[in-house]
Image 1 (cartoon, rainbow, N blue to C red):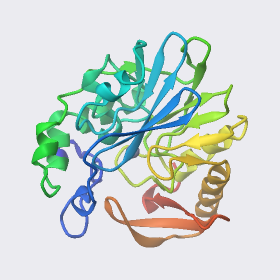
Image 2 (cartoon, rainbow, N blue to C red; image 1 turned 90 degrees about the horizontal axis):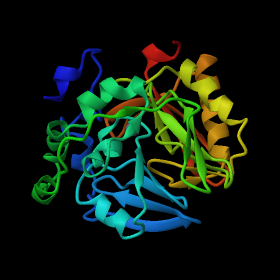
Image 3 (cartoon, helix red, strand yellow; image 1 turned 60 degrees about the horizontal axis):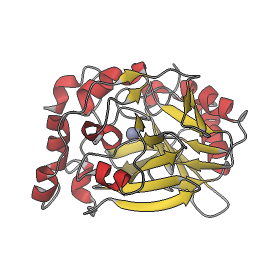
Image 4 (cartoon, rainbow, N blue to C red; image 1 turned 180 degrees about the vertical axis):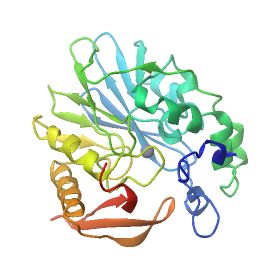
Length: 292
Ligand SMILES: [Zn+2]
């Protein structure tokens, strides 16, 4: 079913591993949405099945919800347990584990370059197909949120004013062509979606080339970033992770080659390096898309 959208010959979101099963089939599933306060007026949710992170940022007049998870169980219940403020929803990019819970909220803001991926990736049927491969998935399927509403275009340079707190929209092409990051200048917090995390993955359909990602990362150096919040793992990082991703892009563009490794979508080609704290920073790439 997912492959009907696969015009480019690449696997759609996630893809299937060498055992023929989607990545969720190999993971220990989470059975509830977890909540954690990670800053002043900033809350992180970790959502089933993959423990991806969504963030709730509170202003005086509005709250901003950054991503909505896969859409299993009610994220709105968790949000309403924290605030009654009107909610603006932004999707950092159009993958189902970031947009799947949109149906519970007003139309999300999304960069138009991800609209095609949104239509193909995030509907009920596509998410049902992915989830149905998890052992004991019946509870997930029962609690799967319906089709999300159509997105509203969000452009680079837009400022979201929450009342006493503003976030800037920064286009961050890479993981998808319409990926964005959000920056809170007052606290130095960058919400980076899936472009800066343990494995930055440029192998899925709708991803950009390594050459396109590099200047996007370099422009972030102009910002007074204190901490980076990711869509997955680790949740909160320092700018050494940004510098690491820049180095990995530069090495690939200089002709270095990575090695094969297992990713959540099966076997991938990736270049990696060790950070001083022992964490491994990985850039998975498509050898056909190093250059634009
Ligand atoms: Zn993603």
